[in-house]
Amino acid sequence: MQSETKSRVDQLTAPSGHPVAVIRFEGDIASTSKDAVLGAYQSLPKETTRIVLLDFTGVDYINSSGIALVIQLLIEAANASQKVYCFGLSMHFTKVFTMVGITKYAGLFATQTDALAAL
Amino acid sequence: MSESKTTTVEVKLPTRLGYEKVAMSTAASVAKLMGFPDDRVEDLKTAVAEACINAIEHGNRLNEKLSVGVVLRAEPDALEVKVIDDGTGIGKKPARPDIDRKMHGEEDPRGMGMFLIQALVDEAEWVAGMDGKSSYVRLLIKLDKDPE
Image 1: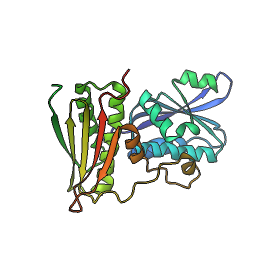
Image 2: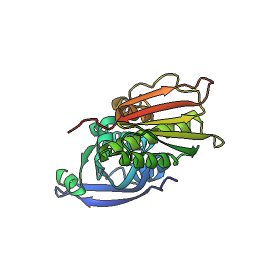
Image 3: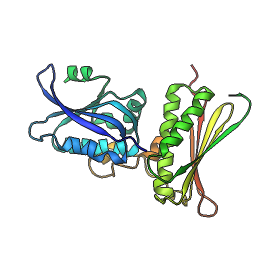
Image 4: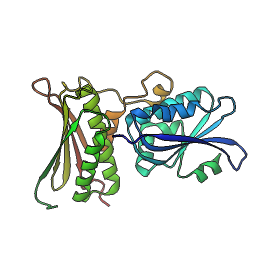
């Protein structure tokens, strides 16, 4: 019933020259999304990845279990001294991420262009 | 939809994660017919989804022999949603989630459903069934909230 979460990783370079790993999600982010969220993050090389962008442009539904997976990703990233930013969230999920405090640990941007320009 | 009549819509969901989206879509359709603005419809969708997930996971404990009832009551100025399960109700409301404690491993990253429900609707109450089952959460979202 839940639409399967797909994710893929793109390696980009910000205008500032910083290498950026972008994890692009598609589908629902719920309790069944562990591999797509944490698995994709854990596939990034720890030694060379300093900045991670999470792309929610293709995501329509995120529930509290999905938010918990994002928080687990943020915990692992913080432990690896990586910075995480998000973009592509709808207005509603921007509000939800702000309400639960994710914005304290992951900056939110409207688009990938906005995020890369700020890095 | 008539402005003076109360309209009731009922949905019976299987106790299976993912089916909360059926209730979510139904609630959204009713709310749109009532004239709720898009942002309030999105609030309602998340609150209803979280209430159904709680009913499936905690109320019915993922027992697929049970079902989750969702009753939507459209009144002239508000939409009431009851999500009914066969659990005994919640003993004590969990503390408000604390992102700092979660990030430092002092609190489970999960456990935000009830917080989201309370934050996104105008009223939320959890009622334990008299017979130790048929507990429900009642949500109310008002049509005239934040009038421009």
